[in-house]
Length: 301
Figure (cartoon, rainbow, N blue to C red):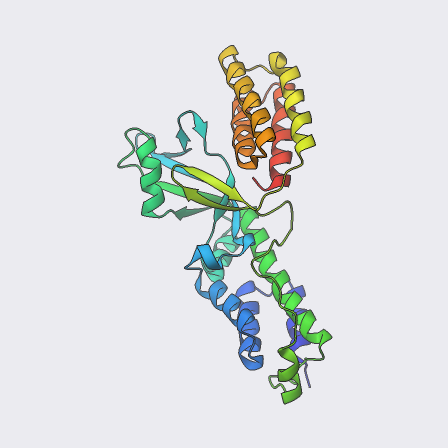
């Protein structure tokens, strides 16, 4: 007889098997063995998440960018508020796994997701003449690939834990002993970090800013980076006015280091990176953008 749990493990290792199919098999397993955490996880992934404050796992916060539609040129441009660019940051993605898989298989480079009226309202209060311009989130395809891989890893982790407890199943049947042992299986943490690359920080709209939680940062790396930026500022190719803004942000970062304010440090680093994007042809500017990006990615900001 085929062992259902082993077959599920094999399916997880077979990239031709989609996450939607894996989730239905895992849901069947959860109902058969009465594992509520696994059942709830499968339900949310299959149908999409509704209560993001309480339910959304960390891996569901992925790098995305808020953009506003320029009605005159019919082009999507990054949101800019008070001179600050809302570049790529961790944003919630709540769509069902089937929708995300369909997008991923389409080969389209970016996924456009409409944002809630509440967040639309927050942005439009700060952006002049934007009442009729829609705002959406855009997620690069590789971010969707990471999310799908996270789901696959979680299902595989459950299947391995069940095997360790001697729970295998004959075809689609489980005996009483297996059902009893299933209650002693260590829970897989669905809301923790699934670290494929960097840290997955939780972000949410708060007023007109995006706050970041559960984020750690190597302060020595920050100090070394802003020292380098300050030393190379005059050779970076940006204007004197832009150099002044970068210097102001460096001073703000120093204050934020003293206050242990990681969020403020992240915002200033994003601002500095955006200043240098305009002169990416300059070798020093390109190097600064790379170093800032690496630090932000490692931190999850």
